[in-house]
Image (tube, rainbow, N blue to C red):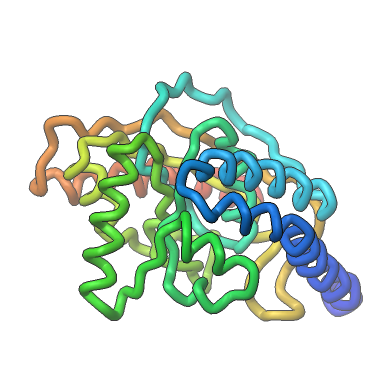
Length: 252
């Protein structure tokens, strides 16, 4: 049965990529002009939200909040979500359209056409192989938190091979939250691994559909220090992982 679906999967993957890059290409001149000045970064964020809305609409992906959203204070937050698809990045602008945030992402994104403009100007690129790059990204993230921007980090450090099973979380997000005394905001994304999986490149799962999301209650870090890091990391892991385990156990 899956073999019969492969042509449709390939067509949708190509269509998804075309929509993504064409929408960004059309809006690229506006982004370029706005990014000439840091004063426009809030406008850039709002334009990203608008862009994500268009892309998801044209790709027939709909966001559904599986549970009631918690009452969130203004922030900022260190936002942690499971990472199972490139779709996660686009969807984040629909999940939190009123909480201005920046992504911390791999330096490889600087090589991507069109997208690289954001990691050169607004979002934070980090080369994990260079300690100096890691330190610069942490300093920049701390400064942006002080300026009221939330920071989105996928604490798995990348997309795991066997999604939706979570990979162990890395420490960076939790050290940043503790040092800055900023709450962790855990988010569980349930369906993106089925809607657009990255592997295999052409025949991996890809289809339109509903993406269910849970925004959990923030985890405060005020008063914590480095001895609390492991417990904070584990608490965040269990918070995000619980709905994934529950959702997949129902389907077995």
